[in-house]
Every structure is written in structure tokens, then in C-alpha cells.
Image (cartoon, rainbow, N blue to C red; front, top):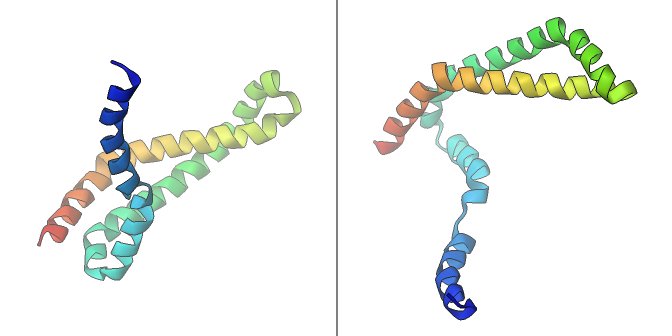
Length: 119
């Protein structure tokens, strides 16, 4: 396939990508949720529960694993171990919170939200 043929296949795709608004999906969805308050009801409990769980997991990880993480990272990062331990623990807390929240709370909330939007 030569360059001219490849560009004819790529142009419609790139044109569609330039018109798509997927990079703004988060802010547009948040704006839509704020302007349509009836959609907040099905997901409010799941949002509160997952936020509280995230805060609890983050606090627990800092209480129980901060100093051991600093000790291990001191071998690799030296004096920056205290700062990199914060980043490592925040990443661990985010991974745990996202996984557990999606499994237990957000799937049901997503189904309820879809049903509410469909009405």
C-alpha cells in the first residue's frame, strides 16, 4: 500500500476523530449531571459510599504502611524516600479503591443511572 492510498483511508478516520468530543466526556457528563438533578438520585448513595471508602483506605494505608514503604524506598531513592512513599501509597489506595468501588457500588449505580437516562 502506497502513501496516497493509506492517506485516503486515514483521512475519514482522522476527520471523525477531530469531530468527536470524547476528550470532554468527563466535564460534559458532570455538567449534564448538575443540570439534570433527577439523575443524581440513583447514584448519590454509591458516590457517597465509594468516597467514604476511598478516604478510609487512604488513611489506613498511611497509618499502617507509610513507614515500611519509606524503609524499603530508602534503599532505592535515598533522601527522597519520604516523598516517593507518599506517591506510592496514594497510587495503591487509588487502585484498591477503584477496584472495590467498581465491584461493589458503581456497577449497580451505573445500571440505575442508565435506566433513569433511558426514561
